[in-house]
Figure 1: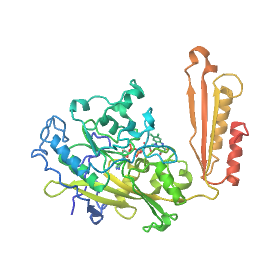
Figure 2: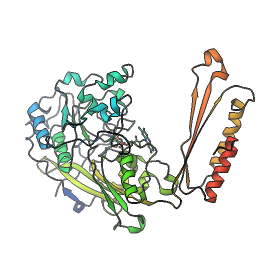
Figure 3: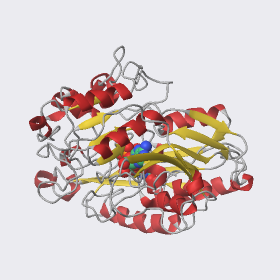
Figure 4: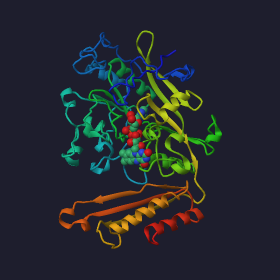
Length: 460
Ligand SMILES: Cc1cc2nc3c(=O)[nH]c(=O)nc-3n(C[C@H](O)[C@H](O)[C@H](O)COP(=O)(O)OP(=O)(O)OC[C@H]3O[C@@H](n4cnc5c(N)ncnc54)[C@H](O)[C@@H]3O)c2cc1C
């Protein structure tokens, strides 16, 4: 029987997870070993260095470049690369244009609007593995705010492969891999465990809190190319929970791809607001979107998670195993993952989420930008108008029913205050709503008319 996964929630790794330690994350009764199966074989990887598990230099138990007993040699890295089938094309991320769904986020200023600043653009595709040939380079910042987009576009391949939302934190992985399947993920996990590397996982890299990265020097498993998708007309575990069926998506799915696929099946998914966000982080972290009041949060919609975890066998060797977690199978792990945030519990291969029937009348979107100033007198859209509008707005929000979801944004520009005073300080209020239903519905008309009262306009 494979060993159970372990993790150390008190480690300094801020939610990235390490593959060794004494804790059993499953806890008493939470993990049915019968539901854990050995993962697809990682293939032939070299044996660990002989002293890889000895106490390391300054008392920590993860490997750094100074620890020659465990730090991966170039030969070991090449072995890992071979296990990842480097000749397999890794092309899926090129962003051509509409109507193709966007396969990954496009970073600010990216030339030709390509994900990862164009790394792996056709015809070459992404490589299976990137690493720092020179570890001194790994210590240097990849992106700085001052450098601007032109410099970011010419960052090293390694920097681009590791690109994530909070890049100024300067946590650079030593190795980044782009697995295409379960066997590749297992190979990466086995490698990292043998070499005592911190393991981080990322798909889009959208996470703000850097839980998708290790302090400098670990292995980043980037699952953005796991793009499988399937419609499951009947969710057999509990059909009542998903009357419109379900979708199983690979861990690399982003909302635009998921919406395009669900539309083919005349269904809708309760995604977040921004099209480039990835399925995994959204659903594990909570997940609020335009249909949350009527269809639930991300965590409400998850039905099943397929995750690879790693533990050790009786001989101390890493064993990667696959666990399926749902309300009935490994329910405690399922509960922990839903809301527990990403990255901590293993590497997700896929997720099954509820499909929803498209509401009668469709889905309605309302977007109204309103501008004004902080002029202290009573002129329209000045400060007094704004104060009264906020009062109306707050009262109106409380009357909205579950079909309405809102993402209002309020922005203030003070850049002209020094020269123009309060009348030169401007505000902009973006009123954005989704309504889960058609515009002929009485509830929609009520919503619209009250919004007109708030804005003192008939424009809605
Ligand atoms: C532009 C933008 C718009 C947003 N809009 C919304 C919104 O409308 N609603 C909302 O609720 N949130 C929103 N967010 C927040 C977003 O949901 C979180 O940042 C979320 O963590 C992003 O998930 P991701 O998978 O895209 O990002 P990633 O950074 O790739 O991953 C997020 C977390 O999941 C882990 N993870 C990723 N893949 C795997 C895997 N295969 N296995 C295990 N762990 C994995 C990572 O380690 C990390 O901890 C937005 C964020 C951005 C940047």
